[in-house]
Image 1: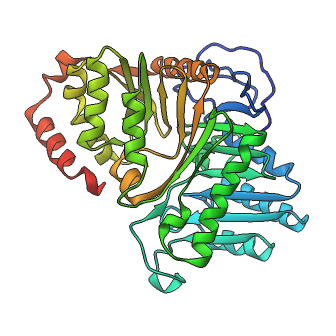
Image 2: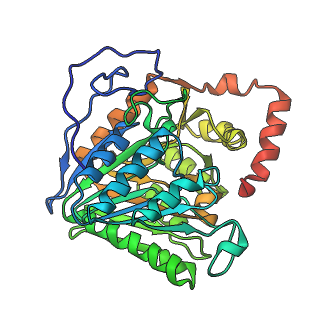
Length: 407
């Protein structure tokens, strides 16, 4: 994806709570880092908040042959219509455009948006329709496509936590949106070069599953570049999914640190124990979790683990002022996992998810700087104060944690 133009530094503004809200105005004090080049020539660009959707929008404009877009929520607000109109224009220009959206995630989307896409020649598929009569194959309402992926001409890819909508884009796509919308805090990575091709292969596997049916495992995909600097894990909900054991191995491999920014944190006991084990071994473990959450029950479930985690030496921060939606794990400042995967039962046992696995100390250093930047807008939870919380809070947290597999 194209890099954004440099701008003059600006002081941190607490007004926007650490969200980069406008082009050319780094009101949150975060400066777009330079791209990182891997051994095979693939370039990685770290994006924060709405600048990721702007980069995606500009990349779609420059598409010459094919566009693959897979997204959980394709909203029909100003931002969603801007993307839809651009995709229609590219299809009319002769570019092959393929779009996958999730039926549940896009439940509130105006159906006219998808009709317009199809009428313009865009190939559109709905993942696991909620209405049983609309599906061509088996009805699986619990299994959702939570992935967020864009591939252009097999040469450019974008992956992260952002859906298509005003909450994620802020004012980066539509300068004067018709409705006021709070911007969400999120991350993405742009991938330019040979490494983008395997993300295209992942999309094609999912497209094949939707159009031909069969076992959901057809949508599973994993690969890595020669040398292993960049990999992709597109998981599906199966009994022997590689996602949980892969996350456990990653945490177990930590030699110095684990930094985790997670929108929805309600893991099983095994993953909690891996984090505690790392901290007990002297690894620096830091968690950035939401102070505000669009799914309040998940936040309550996350808080039920705070005392155990902090008792092992883990530092917990709650991001303030905005809804935290990013999902990243950085181990030893050198291995980064970024994508749609949350640390909860839904990501592991119910959803199709996709993450990029990046082995680069330069990129890991950028991720650590971003984590430290979020600390400027976060509150660190104090163990002594936390232990004095009301008994009623303890009970509610315990009760919700027992049912977290349903969230």
